[in-house]
Image 1 (cartoon, each protein chain N blue to C red):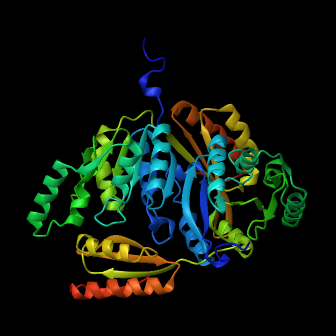
Image 2 (cartoon, one colour):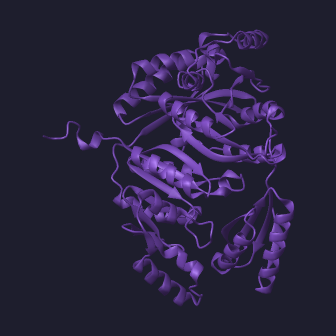
Image 3 (tube, each protein chain N blue to C red):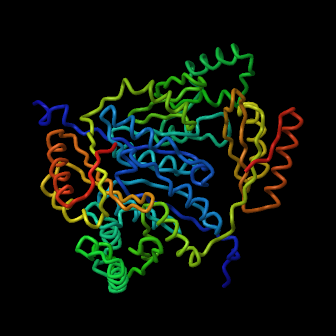
Length: 257
Length: 257
């Protein structure tokens, strides 16, 4: 029996799990979430939840298991370096109930890398070759130490440049669904003036998600109205209805990104 | 019988729940998490988890109930404006299993505010006075529409300037524990050279949490080593041990923030 829904309408979802005390202490501002949200959307994957947990195995295990059961893909960032506080690989192995050991392919590529660089491949650096049983490696074109994939969970570095490079290695194998299209109206009206109409429009266009974000710029109060949908026809119709209403109200209407 | 631990050693924990499609779509970069982490630490509250969920009631309810059971305080940001997508108050009421209605005090202060401003206090704006039964108001010195507190959950606006002002209204009533003290060494050595010593030091000083964060600046590879503890004596001893080791290794050692 064929799938009742054609493949192109299946929504594909993801979560990101940011692992690291440095984010929760406020020392480091996470930049991976917003970047990943945008790139995932480009390929038709909708980011539906994000969590930040500390470098504590039980917390990582609980979060990974909750998220991988709920979403099509899970992307983790952080905790795969050579130091004792890098416990992501061990935690993922524990989450999946599998063993972990130095991965032959990872050992080989790091051996080559450190030989070429004339840097000692010491025990701490060998930690970076520890990969859960059954996982496949994710290439790291920046600093070599690989990430890995196990089932629907992709484990990546926390340093944004490295994470981004790893993600581009992964991207071709991700199977996306329909892409969320977005149009934004910058309206020179306070949110409270637009709210009632927006709520009514939301009922008219149930397949268009409508968000309202006030802004305050140089004393000017306005609202960015963000319409999002996988259905371009519905999106454009909702946009036109909303823009026409705002113009009737005498508001400035600018399409922004 | 007296508490076996003196009050000052009780660790006080918190989680933040960021509510909003705009963060998950990548449209808006969250700035509340890092700010709140720092301010909470100032008053002896440790941020232990952060979650970002979309504007979907069931998701908000599940996250609030998980977090409020696990941490001393929960702070939510976002979703308390006048539009249909602002569903935080209703979701919190659902999470606590209580009713929700226009709160007399909130209605009174918004009535005054809009009268003074000569702005119509329409039905959409009245939504901002909907507060779960049993909650107390959190003052909003910026734009008047209040946040609220119910048990250990504080509900705040998503706009950073408003969130920050609301938090400063709340701060005096928060009961903190010991403050986490932090010292950071910027070491001119790659992480893989420091890792083994750091792991050994971590065992010597179990009450000092040691984190290692590589940096790459103008072709220079180095590592920020962050030591954190509520015990100043242990922190300083660990710092001195680590700095002495790094100097022996011939690394540049700079105390940074």
